Image (cartoon, rainbow, N blue to C red; front, side, top):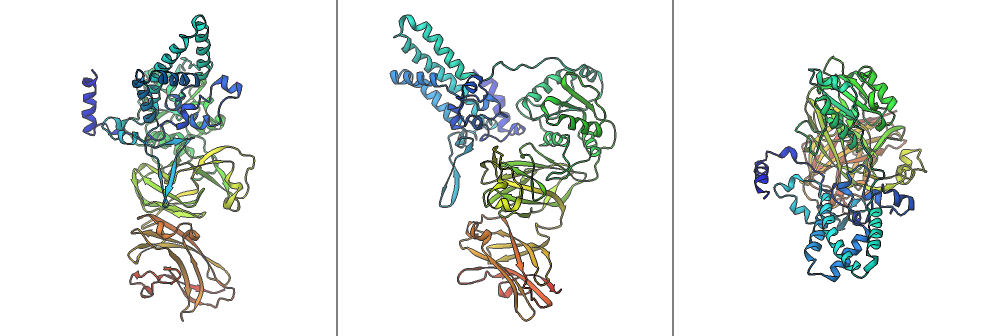
Amino acid sequence: MTAPFLLPFLVSSLRGELAYLQEGGATVFAADLLGFVAPSPTNPVLQHLGLLPAFAQRVVPENFMLSDKLLYLGLFPLGLAVWAVVRHPRRLAVWAILSTGAALLALGPLLRANGQLITFEIDGLRSYVPLPYALLMHLPGLALGRTPGRLGMTVGFGLAILAAHGWAGVVERLHHARFVATAILGALALVEYLVYWPTPLTSLAAPDYLRQMAQSPEEGAVLSIPLARRRINQVALYYQSIHEKPLVGGRVFRDLPGPPGLDSFLQGLHDAPSTEDIVLQASPQDVAAVDRACGVAHVFLFRDYVENADRVEAFLTTALAPPVSTEQEVTIFRVPPGPTTVDAVMYGLDHHWYTPDIWGNSPARWMPERAELYLYLPTGQTGVLRFTALPLAVPQHLQVTVNDEPLPPLVIGDWMTYTTPLLDLQPGLNRVTFRALEGCTLFVGDPRCMGPARATAGACNPYLHQERCLSVLFQNIRLLPAVSGPATHSLDVVLGEQVRFLGYDLKGSAAPGQVLALTLYWQGLVEIDRDYVIFVHLLGPDGELLAQYDASPLNGLYPTSRWPVGEIFAHRVALQLPDDAPEGRYDLLAGMYTYPDIQRLPVASDRPYAQDGLIWLQSVESGP
């Protein structure tokens, strides 16, 4: 019966014509294993009685549609369903199979419990628990669906039939009390399933200015703030039926084809940035220029859903002009005419980043498993991203993707400055995605109060009890022009056909008693079967060793035998010069060797000292 309607869809899907409907997130929008026993965290009765389990908020987070995450089966209906299947297993097998199968598929491609993906480790390899949906999601048509959790409605349908059979078996024994018992059971089930009370409603009143917009020939788009809130998106769609103008980011189920991340970038651009953040903030004049370049004609500020609404309204008044309407709790700004170009790079962050903390007197932000950075450029250019980073768990592998093109992963180990490989950036908006390959870790409290972070960060908040899923901390993200790889001093030297040395950064003075700070950039070319020690030597003209450094990567926490092929590892070195270092010219050398036999990896290069298994970096002058 459905084939005539589905056939054109399947044909278009096989031809690749529906690629713009493809979205990731099957693991994010899947059911949690505890979701089947987690009632709505907004259930007013259970809240009042203190019967809400602590995990309900993690399993059914507030920022998701309840139809995606709320799969609560209910204790009374589930008990009746089990009772019915025990009494009539053959008769009810089809309904039991339907509910059980749908529940298994609702869990998505990977098993999630208590708000995070379940992982296990075998022989040092970390993996996840795959489920049957991982195969089904690659079938034509099904690949466009990313919300396995909605199969919970099918689970509920089968459960309803089973519970009805179970209750039918109970009332056969109740005789005259069946009506009272049914009413009591119905009330208990209603209390269990209650989501909100009273049900929230949206007013249909709209500002009169919307009708003026409908009569205007201007075709500029409308940007609503905050668009990340689903309720605002719904109101924006309703308002569109009145003003009849395009929307930035307005969506029902999927985004229309367009620049990925544009709505999120514009959202952050108008959010009255604070004086400092991990990225440079845009000026009000640049905000208006970007609006005009992106075709935005009006900005709708929904004050009740914005923190610091007065500050945001004051910023928009400066950037655009005084509001043209303040009716119905929405402040409307019209973008004035003017230039459509900006002179400098503009940065933006998506909503996944956590709010800034102060680490070492500078703002820093934690990211969960995944977060995005936006770069808006007046012209295309090639450059590198440089930032300071610290992992919550050492080490963390960071996958950087630029406009859907992946770069070699970076190993984030020490609290230090990292540099990405070269980025090819296009004029206009560029989307940079950071993904922590080890995932994030649930953490309660302030990481600045414990572990090595305490010495790094300084002041902390011991009274913070917020639970967050943390992976990598970022600070001072900057786009820098570059003509070659991640290092300031770029090299391309291969060691033993196993490791490539990409170059180094150098800071400090070669004066007696001072420290030379180096960052060495390495890349694994093959799977390395041995653990090597990294060394740096400072040699005099006569071969005398003035200073040296020897250590395993991350002090043994990340040995070379665990380096994946293609991954870039930045290693920090502090070379201490003796207080009585004589004046003179010294050569700075680096390399790798095995321990305890002290066999250096051969160096394939025509640079000095290569025949001795040494990479010559540069000469330095030691003096007062």
